[in-house]
Image 1 (cartoon, each protein chain N blue to C red):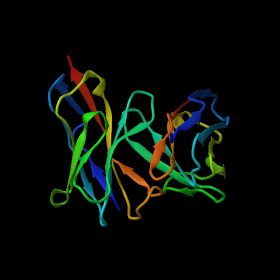
Image 2: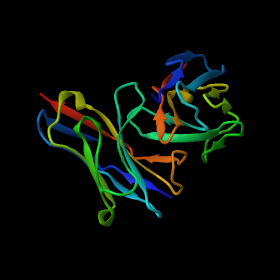
Image 3: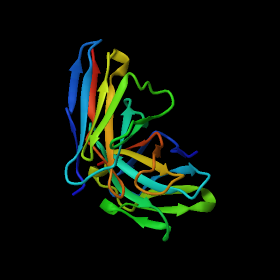
Length: 116
Length: 112
């Protein structure tokens, strides 16, 4: 079974500051890891994903995440926050079967606020 | 490409009635679709996995007779909430798979 832990429910940063959203996972098999963003009353948009290969993954809108197996982490970062980054962010893990038909297990999400 | 739509985007129904939510993959065929439920300020909880032409697989604790899922074609899955009650009020999101999961915009259900 897989699980995802996103500590804290709310992160607030100033515009232009570093964004760091933490995600730790538990998986008995090599995980596929995902970060999604959700704007109010909308569905989820994929920011980036790790499957295999390079552990530093770059996504859309300037976000990136690094898979650290030893720390079972997949933290999301962005060097400089923009007002439009304010949203809900979900980390997710899939498995044990690989591929698009795998079930996703989501963390509880983190609300990112960006101060002017 | 890879657009998933849901209809309706929001619906209000009276307690005891049934409501159907459609999930369509607009520009691809999806053999598998997933249905999620999201309560305010909470995460997405997988309700069921819907495979075209076969019965849906429900997650533990989800009442299959209350949440009827039909995946009649490679582009359409429907979720019917039968005999809805106020506690069924929630945000329902579907996803369709095409190399990865693509999410619909969600349906806000309010049961009065």
